[in-house]
Image 1 (cartoon, rainbow, N blue to C red):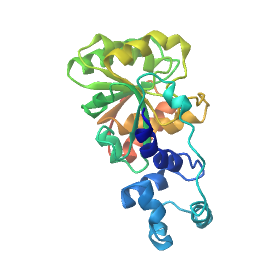
Image 2 (image 1 turned 90 degrees about the horizontal axis):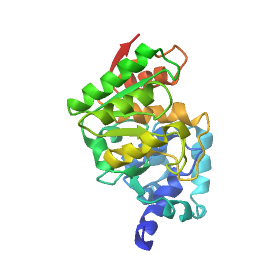
Image 3 (image 1 turned 120 degrees about the vertical axis):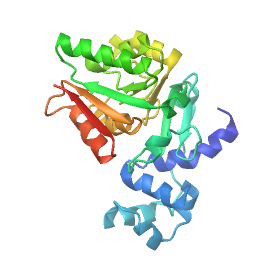
Length: 261
């Protein structure tokens, strides 16, 4: 990453880093005004038309943009070999994800980010499924891959693991979406699968390098899993689970949802 690239990325990373502004609002701002610079130049009345603001947060944002935003530390980004930082305006930003209402305005990727623009199906499910569930996940992963679909999942233990394994046995690449920075070895048990993913597919996250795998990150990242896909297959998903959250996101995004009980 050269100095010119870092200068161009700085306003995007600063806007993305405002964690008290919701993702729906940030996505809406960029869709409305095009760039972070356009957001900063917009009138308060125009900003207020973007859905999702509360009066308090809009007022806070108007006050915050009158001061310089915090500097961006690029050292963690430079330390990740092969890192791609895709802004919402980047041609490599996945087109299907861009259509969703709360897409992250910045994505971090390692591997080949272009594969996320191919036809994709997400396969998700329980971390503690039955052996039959694991077998089905692997069969679906392999079958979908052989049919030309990129299989998207979350690299978690359980169904995700077997979906990725099956996909990697097939003809097409696979994509994982993480709930942490791309430099975090999580889960450690899937180190080999992650390495294979990077050789044939890609790993994505909205979290900057150095971000640990905190529990609340995973339900949030599930909207990206469904957003990248044409549809979602849920295998042995329990009522209160991340896979059901993914299914809800998929329905809100007008994706097809399939289930294996």
